[in-house]
Image (cartoon, rainbow, N blue to C red; front, side, top):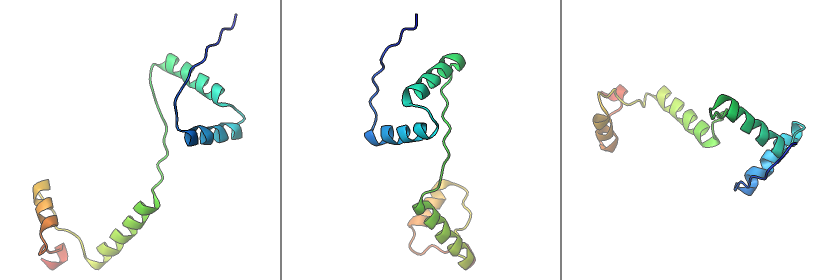
Length: 100
């Protein structure tokens, strides 16, 4: 006899909606995906998530700016420890590596 039970999970409404869109594109529903995940959890006794990290627009802009700074020679000198680096960052008269 196949017995089922209900699990109530609290999640953000946007997360649920987006998840439903994704699983529907895959021809599934949330119950099927959650059940498959629970079976995997039981079988492997591990929790694993696969996240593809995409850089944000802010990060891409910051990287672009830093590349321009590097080309202009605005590069900090090398530091032996974090304390020296913080001291350099706070010093308004600090010089870049190309100014030493």
